[in-house]
Structure formats: C-alpha cells, structure tokens
Image (tube, rainbow, N blue to C red; front, side, top):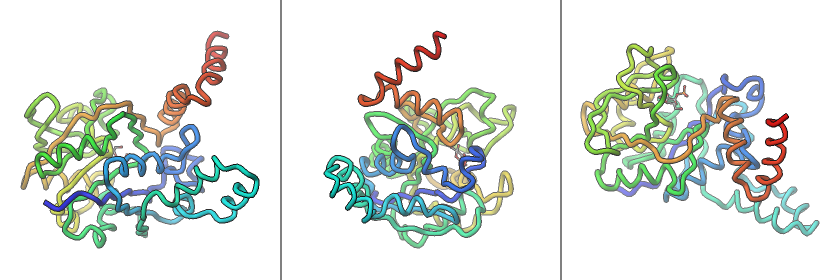
Amino acid sequence: MRPLRKIIFPAAGHGTRFLPATKASPKEMLTIVNKPLIQYAVEEAIDAGMDQVIMVTGRGKRAIEDHFDVSFELESVLRSNGKQQQFEQVSQISRMVEIIYVRQKMALGLGHAVRCAEHWIEDEPFGVSLADELIIHDIPAMQQLRDVHEQTGCSVIGLLEVPREHVSRYGIVAYKKESENLFRLTDMVEKPLPERAPSRYAIAGRYIFTPRLMELLREAMPGAGNEIQLTDSIARLAKEEPVYGIPLQGQRFDAGTPLGFLLANATLGLADPQFGPELRKHLEQLICR
Ligand code: G1P
C-alpha cells in the first residue's frame, strides 16, 4: 500500500447557504475566532501527516491562494513595526505546506470537483476534506480516519449521527456494524427524504479513498440535484471493495451555515484563552438581561 500523503480540498462551491456573505468572498475564508475555515482544515490534514495539498478552486476564490501565499508588504510592515508575534503568525502560514491549485471551471458537483484533481493523485490513496465542516478534537478527524485506513488498507469515511429531520441535508449511509466504532458501508444515498434514509448516519465531510475511487468518478453521471455526486461513486466503490465508516469523535460545526458558524464562534471563542473570559462576561450579560 502506498503511504497516504495527498489530500484534496474542494473549494469551488458557491456557498449559497451563506449569502450574502459569500457573494464575493469564498465561504472557506469565513473566520472562526481569528482563523479562516480553510486554515483549520489544512492544519488538521498536516497534523494527520498529509502534506501534499491539492486545492480545487474556482472563480472568486483568489483570497484562498493569497491566504497561503507570502504577503511581502504585510510581513515587512509587521517586522519594521516590531510586531514579531504577528509577523511569525502570518509568515508561518505560507511555509505550512505546498499547495497545488486546480480550477474547477464549472460547478458540476462535489464528485466533479474531486475528479478535477485526478492528474495529481496518480495511483495513490488520498484524502478529501470539506472545510465548512469544522471538527475539533485532540485527535484530528483526518487522523481518526487514517488510523482505520492504515489498519485495513481500505477507504474510510467520517460519519455523524443526525436527527431524522436533518437527513435530507447530507449523504446518508447504510451499514453493517463490525464493532461499536467500525461500520462496513453497504450503500449510501445523497440527500434522501427522511422516509427513504437508510439510517441516521451522515457523511461528515472527511474521506480517505483508495485510488479506485478516481476511476469510478471518471464514469460518474449526474445524480441528486443534477450534480455529479461524490456519494454515488462511493456507493459503487462499496460494491467492489470494503468501504468503512467511523463515527467521528469531537465537536462538529456545520460552519458553512450562519447558525453553525455562530455556534462555532461562540464555542471556540469561549474556549480561547485570549478572548474567552471577556466574551463570557458579555454573553452572560446579554443572556441575563
Ligand atoms: C456534501 C456531500 C454530502 C455530505 C456533506 C457534508 O454535501 O455531498 O454527502 O454529507 O457534504 O457536509 P454539501 O454540503 O456539499 O451539499
């Protein structure tokens, strides 16, 4: 088995669940406390030992490239003003990892976005991470998947249990339990009606795939919402070889929606040593009014 080093970040979507904020700014640049979502996701991948990043972007997403680039002017201003700590914070972002940028010219779906990175994957296993799903845990979500991938050599998907009334927002899996925390996935369906959902376990935006998935994506046809769905190709993969699902540990926020974003900011803000104590005071005053 080739070692797992590559990870794809699909970041070309329109962010329609967060308009008007995402009209001219990428949703991946939405900020939780003081850091954009995409940086949380890239740091999670690096912490899980994945250091070859392929970012699939589109029109209007230049801010992502700029964020991970060197910022000469800002860095020299910070340095000449003696702001060493901020200088370090900014300059280390551009040294964090090598990123390859690929453009998805038309928003034809998540499966299509992943396929746009095909050329860079070659014959290796690879991760896929959706940055608007923010998952916080001591063991990074991608590492939780990686542990199972290394034990089994198979594809692994992060899962999240959701209320039945929310199943139509996600890809939902059918599974057989191999143990308490390891499910063998037998099928999956993208955004089902509650009465059609095979379970309450949703795909949580973290995936590791064997290279076979890329071949299946090449043949993929449009599915739900007339988009090329990643979920449909994973369902095909699961008929050919074992695909595992693991319920992810950690706090998870759907930060690509206004409510999830607010909850993430409140939760991480309260936990932040710099801003937490002051924020707590303000929130308590607001709530006790
Ligand atoms: C995508 C996937 C879906 C998954 C979800 C997680 O949907 O297609 O299977 O459950 O991400 O956030 P999207 O949110 O892009 O509509």
